[in-house]
Amino acid sequence: MTDFELVRKKLALIESCVREIQEMVRPAEIQTDLVQQRFAERTLLIAIQASLDAAAHIVSDDRLGEPRNNRELFEILGRNGWIPEELVEALILALLAANQEGLALREIRTRLAGTLAEWEVKDDLALRKQLELIRARGHGRGAYWGLSDQ
Image 1 (cartoon, rainbow, N blue to C red):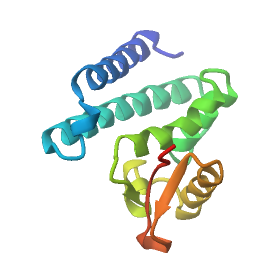
Image 2: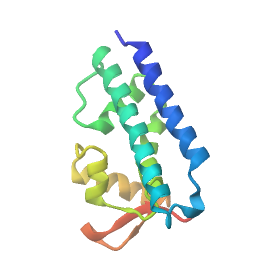
Image 3: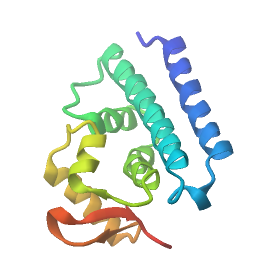
């Protein structure tokens, strides 16, 4: 049985992190101010970890399946009505939004806890590129991925 108090605490932590980013980060300065950049990155990572913790708790306690990676945690929650399935797609976009300079494929995999196969990440990135949500600078393994300028 899911411990709803634990999930509430994780959600409160996520909300707190988002609020802190909204209130304290100055987007115009994030590329030139290392303190701003590191604060935004670290705070976002705390929120991401809290979401992973809550997701893993729900999937495990409700015996919803055996996810092979972090993405599958959220896919399972989506399939079982815990979260809207569109939210799963938003996770990679949130990761790229937090890193204005862009991220290499290897870094994206690392930040997603390295549990996704390279081809899975490539497929996700290619789809989002077709939808013009993200862009790539460079080619192949040396490409840096970031949000589209639109």
